Length: 456
Ligand code: C2O
Ligand code: CU
Ligand code: CU
Image (tube, rainbow, N blue to C red; front, side, top):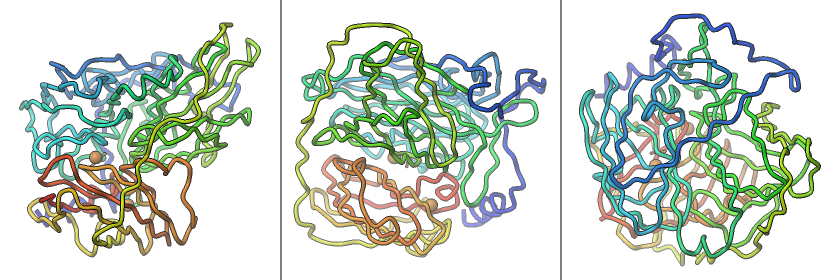
């Protein structure tokens, strides 16, 4: 195992291998990706099919997908779709997902953000072999929120996610329904990619994290979305391997932030920009009600200066929806009974150790509130993610030295930048058993910046 991981690290460090799901070698005449804003041909935003998790068949396999405008790419896809179908269910429903592995590698499906028993959490210890299958069955019992399903195999997560395996899993509940949130709701899975000379998505691992030069929203290159003069609710997922986006609207209008990883915030917060790291989600309302027909508004990434998605106001309606103010009750987790410190060291270690499938690093008593302190000595950003429970961000010291509106409420992933210490309160009250703590920069995770723990 140790040798295998060392080989993987070496592979990533040397950038020696560019993995590709290439099936066809044909050149793509439609490649023209570096066009300046305004000159670029835009493609309709892909909206993934919505499906129920009850009796769902889910197959991971190589596929040819349209990135928009007949820009075909080889990919690894769930049910042939990139992103995979949006799974949607209400709290209390049962998920029973028959999963088949049509890849040539081991894989798993992890339900990032969902509180499920360890045996169906899709951990690297429970791989599904090529040609194999398994059933992921669990009861959905958590607040309304948007989650992310993606592969989690040992040392292959970065490659499989980069090549297309990902989808959204939305949970609804009665509290959310009673708020009368905007009925126009669109999931936005935002990531980057790299295309090879024939236009196929490729994976070029780097130890600092794979970043590609091209943005994709819902798997669409240069997307646009026709909108009504109405309020829209966007469910945003940071779905990149390593890239952090700073989202803002090109017309200077605010986002009305209503939720994040673990569901609704206490109250709506207008914000000018939002940072979204890999694994983080934000639930935002955008107000197009007073815009003249023909107006365009760009969803931008301020870090890279990218135009991510163009909204085109094309349809006049009288919208009865309103922006809510009070949303939910967030009960603070009480006084912690103990503190644990996790140092995210280098690019492959937590507290000085690389991940070992067979080693449990610590145990956490069920139902007790703990304070977890995440720190780093460099090589950040590290988006820190925990399985099995949501947490509350208490403080960030050093670096940016503050917390942000999108870090209130309940989180399962928090961004740790260089020189930062982030403290969270956490209490496991779903299930006992083995869960994971890791950096969600997938190259760091694959190189070993991950730890097993056991809720006892
Ligand atoms: Cu999004 Cu352990 O994963
Ligand atoms: Cu997870
Ligand atoms: Cu990291």
